Image (cartoon, rainbow, N blue to C red; front, top):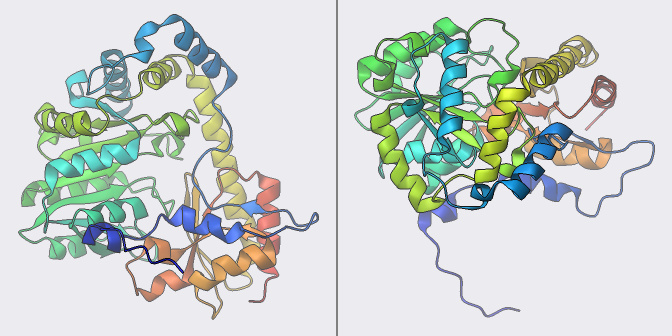
Amino acid sequence: MSTESPIPLSPTIKTTQSPPIMDATSWLEGIEFPADRPLINVSQAAPALAPPLELRREMARIAIEDDSAHLYGPVLGLPELRSEIAAQWRSSYHGDIFPSDVAITSGCNQAFTSVMATLCASGDEIILPTPWYFNHKMWADMNDVKAVPLATGSDLLPNLESAARLITPRTRAIVLVSPNNPGGVEYPAELVTQFYALAKARGIALVIDETYRDFDARSGVPHYLFQQTAWRDTVIQLYSFSKTYRMTGHRVGAIVASPARLKHVEKYLDTVTICPNQLAQKAALWGMQNLTEWVAGERDEILKRRAAITQGFAKLADKGWRLLGCGAYFAYVEHPFEMPSSQLAPWLVKNASILLLPGTMFMPKGQKAGEKQLRIAFANADPTQISQLFDRLAHIEP
């Protein structure tokens, strides 16, 4: 028996939930899956494959030939990458965006934390639609910032009037994720504009995380935020290269915000990482300039898998399941069983060789809706595996 004294811990870090993906992965320990029923892992929204070969070859070339890839770079990122993002965003959003509005970060999570560091102090509040992205909630908890849940409707879309009622003198931002993680839904452009107007009128920030923008099923602009004359006073956009180019291990993300805000973001980034990964930034730039057709193919494949989810869900609908949302990498579903999802999810590992996440990981503690919900991250499951997934779920009796 250990007599070691407890390690000193900050009260906020102590009460912050454990990383959900790590918790779920622990359910696999000691389990051997039958040969005729291999594990279907739909727990994590990360590409399971390496970047395309042509991008890896370019990364190898950079590593060997470009000495600057191994040195410190500008804190706010490679100027050429910032310029490329600004140019492509101007085209795709039909908006007023310049390189000085762009900063590069070590992944989208760092984009979020650095922005929040400029917005919030201890005791402040941010509004998060539920189900929420758990890392956003975790940052709030460990920084003594109150995450105020904004309930969504049966369509998983947040209600504007409900949001307005939640704003207090301590509210610093409303955070939207579209396409949504975990719900998969794509927020209508008109709804996003309404949230912009609300945030602007109340003097708070509208933070929009568009990690999955390249897998949006819509063909037009996803929103009109960058067409607003004074968008820099209110809007902060977050982006990630991880999913688009399969660069999860290289950690490259981006912020689009006012230069005035990015000046303060720079303080945070200089303290935490000094600069983003130089090699990864150069690779992301090459990808933006040379892999347009490849990215379009990746989007088409995700949309095929989304179609397989919506078309094949009849197997579960007949059993009382409900498909609440589907898009980008995710399907968010409601199960019909008495067993709560916090127990059902680990039960499925042992009894159906399925690893997915319970809705409780995306909801405030004690909220009953989460116990009826599950998230299926289907990006790494092809249509055959999706059909197998539904076959297994249709025949379980927990």
